Amino acid sequence: MVQERERFFSQAGGVHSFVHGGKFRICKAYQFLKPEANSVSWKRIICNSRASPKSTFIVWLAIQNRLATKDRLMSWNLNVDGQRVLCQKYPETVTHLFFECEYSAAIWDKVMQSCGGQRSIQNWPELIEWVAKKSRSTKSPDTYRSVLFIESVYAIWIQRNSKLFKNKLDSCSNVVNRVLFRTACRQDR
Image: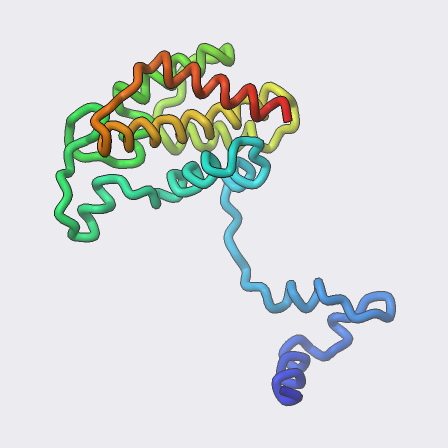
């Protein structure tokens, strides 16, 4: 144990590199030990979120393309029908599910209208970047849009699973009303 401590301090250039104002600073040792990580532009969508934890977790998975969509399940060589769940076409990807699908496009159109915007964004990565910019702000309209995005993605994912496992799909207007309600509830915290 003593040898490990000596090796650690020698790699850091001595114990004095962790001392500030005559005191040993654990944060300096932590920064030395912590590996350098690339910063991602979307971190504020997740970290500053006022949305529900479940919704935020689903968005975190979606942004990283880690949701168990049919294309991912097929890439793991699982015996899965690759047909899209919501619009019955092939294959189901995160980009298609949350942006290109007619059902989700109708939801996005209504959601954007509700916050006074238009759906001028052309693809899923562009939508994530737009929301990431809004998430950096503390202004009420921007935090509202950020929560609206998160709750919309979550609602689409819930509808996808409902259609897949229960063969039940709610109308776009019902989904949008639920998204708007959940967003309003989360904003008033």
